[in-house]
Length: 67
Image (cartoon, rainbow, N blue to C red; front, side, top):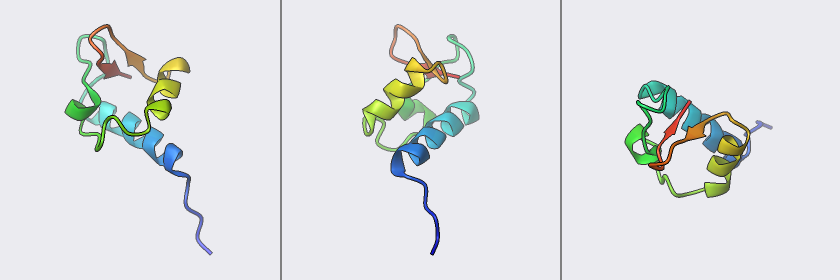
């Protein structure tokens, strides 16, 4: 039997990976999730909110994210 991580964990990792890949590493270089290439950027909003709450990613006043 294979182990598959839960969808929220996969989503979390995709968001982090996409933000890193597009160079969203500061407030100046921040991107929307759509700009970063995250599929269905409005899906699983709680995952994104939790990443911000725990300071894994940051959100600026324009609604863009960065690592």
